[in-house]
Image (tube, rainbow, N blue to C red; front, side):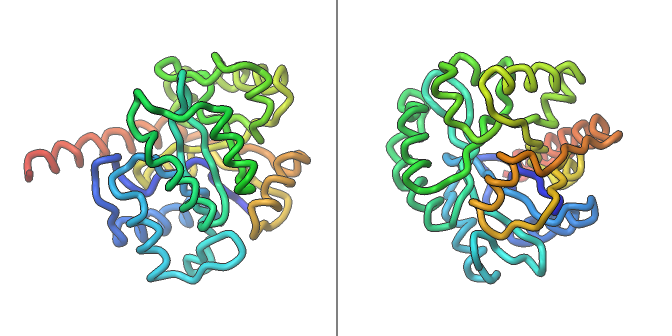
Length: 252
């Protein structure tokens, strides 16, 4: 199973969810060789629950994923934490809804949840948790203690960061993961379908539950594949996203 563990299905936090755009994104993900993805939309995006409500109306949900005509979508959240950094929390849709409800008082920067509390909630809700783009200079995760970071399931090797900082970023993330004692997994961090396929995880088996996915990552039964077109994909997605946002502003 080829899976991208860091994806977004909205152009930005302020845009509405569009089912048509979502279907186009899934088609592009398939075209780029993906069988599954974790939908880690920002927890404080505009009306997050509209996404799950729409998916519930249009697609069958079983085990821990939405079945998009054979394509697996595992729901999740990207959560800002106090003192900096983002955590990807992936789980059963009921767990995702519950975590989002608990985060309602923590949607603004001055009230972001503490990392330890978020990890406690993820433990309680049996959620997979990945440290997103840990070395991104604008919002690093590495200022948190190794004891806390060790409670993560993995660090995210992020396509945007590979583009922005170059191939040395791979070595930096690997070194930090080794020192903490957790694995590294791949995430495109796409906000536009053109970025799908820039990087992915190739698992040695098929997973239908988050617990199976976590075990596969923990046991190292996967490899990361980085596209030779990563830079082109990230640049193209960023440019189109910028143009679409400008167009939206003009129309507004």
